[in-house]
Image (cartoon, rainbow, N blue to C red):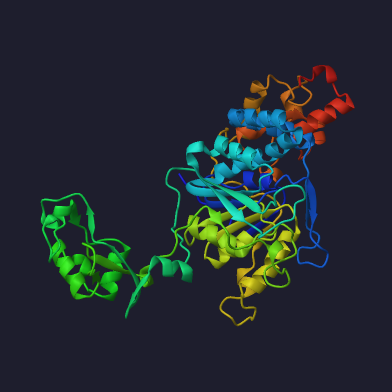
Length: 505
């Protein structure tokens, strides 16, 4: 069951998105778009004279990025994913395995927070796309794969000794069988309209469409109409009664058209309205379908527009100076197709906040997360410029009313029910028996009163106060661990030689 989100809309977090994601309620997000590092083996920094100055990140990966605690959690929660990452390590490199581990542990949380009616778009390029596709199949299920959308981000690129790399990939997955989907069409070009609608009358361009269907009928639809005998040619009459064009006919030419029951009566009404083309040659009349009613081209999985920022001037407008920034129109296209007004959008690698700005423009709620503190300032600067929010104190909607909530620490989940006794003493006694009276760090057997409760995943990193995240350890181990991970504690105990004979790693 979907839950209410414990994070208000228009919130931007600055910090590690894994910690932030762990603090968001389960199944409360309608749409996730992520534009993570692509494993480009490069370091990125925004120019000093740009809005995003100071923002930077390394897209270089090593074995150090495969944290032991992440690997353990992946193996426990998704064994298939664990084996896939090991396969990437053998077939590609340790660097790829480190990158996929970084991505997988975060995608696990994204899967958890997404509603069953929600969708996720993972933006990447061909560097790791085939491995990321496997990760998404393991997490969301191959049956929930919808599309690989190919975005033509540039018109050309000069890559020595190979074909120019001008394409990105967006993997679209749903969490359940009935994701939100809105048919967002694009208008036909003038050339396309001329080709699709070659004829013209006083009402505009049209094409002659078939008024019959395959097969004969013993009913009225099989009877001759005017000079045309459809049954003799193995057909039957099929004048539209429902659908978009029937609605267009009713609104523009024949009031009450869709209420006409008889097929011959509909044919008569269409003919009287001048909507049937009677050919001088040929055997069939045709229904005039006008270009004005054309809904446009349905969406395809090749996006040739908008282009990325590398192929036109980056001066002014929406460009912030961040090298990997994506166009606003691209995010608007995605958000329109896979969400409705009022839905909650999450971008866990929000960078210069393009998804947040697009969501705001389209009347959606949103949450953004980025490791760079500059992301919040870039968001505010872009909002003032691109959303044209009034600044005057006497306006009904002021900047102060709109201003986003900026947080640096994870929220506490409200969808978890305590699974331990309300009495803290009983809580400790329960864990003390489970741990066989030993500290989980140094594994020394100790009295209950010298052990203290510790959160395995610290609260500051999105951990929750539930029994599955609690353990007992001695004061020394607790002081060494602080708000860091168990992996860090084990390393420190080994380095310091504290009761090394008792350690069991």
